[in-house]
Image (tube, rainbow, N blue to C red; front, side):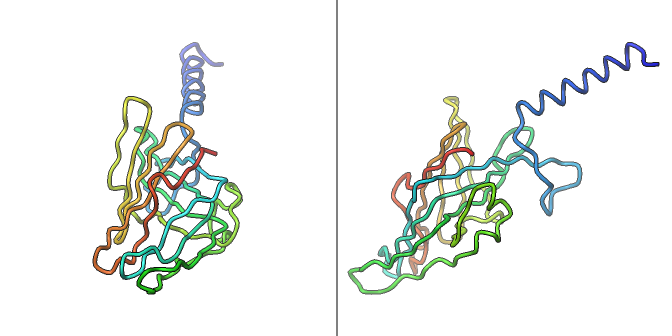
Length: 197
């Protein structure tokens, strides 16, 4: 027979579980390298309108226009909500060579089959896919504003990606950092537009 203390303890556990389900991000299976017992939280983002960025040639000219529908998976700290990592790319990609003043070509980005990504069905990704940011790229800046806007950036060897988002909308861009060989990517300001799925 249960006493009053055990009943109130069970009610408290159920209440906490319900509260956590209402305010937490969906929890998925642990990733490799995450300590056992820690939950990982994710949010999924997608754009249905094609967005573009550009592959630069060695003269810093836009040599290839890369167009596709953007997608992103954000990994959050389950307690603070701080962005810990992301995977970002373009689906249904086309890569169009552009005429440049120098005549020098740019290199196309490597593509993947959409089925190579675990969440391709959830986001309805279609091949070919260009993965611009992988999980291995660290979040280099993160800021939360009182207006309900968050901002983060990811710096890779040749480019820096910057994103602003609120509870349902995200926009971002990429800036070339390679000023020696210029083989990075760049985009117009706020070129990537996504909504939370």
